[in-house]
Length: 208
Image (cartoon, rainbow, N blue to C red; front, side):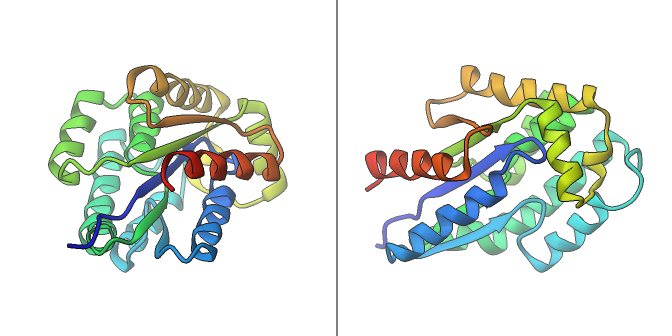
């Protein structure tokens, strides 16, 4: 049987640079001739991308927190069943921009949805699939929002006030204390080059 692929996720607040680093890592793995796919949440499949468009567009108060959580897990279920799990079973590595931890941080800590409810959905939807490695990008809220102004690519979450983003950041930072040791905190204030070197160095030491 082919060895199962490695599942790597990138987490963090808006404007933290995680999407950029996910792409850099994907390119590095491809250069090493490691079969890899780069994907994202919400999204990743045709059906999940349709839900993504519903989630990210419109007024910032468009959804009740519980409704929004259910939409995220509907998108995640499609993503897992049609893309992530089949790839991993074929021995393909998966690099994913966001996963369950983002739902805990945004809908749980940010909107106040019960973490127990989110964990229940996670158990039922994700079939015990946990990342082999998660990089959590940490950036102060004011710097994060400043980057968003420069980037000028709005989604509903970017329009929420700084108190929301503080809750999200606090949850992400606390994850390292409550989770397994496969959660790596990244100082997102460092240069793109320095961050990518740290990520690749960690992989070289632990997965190659």
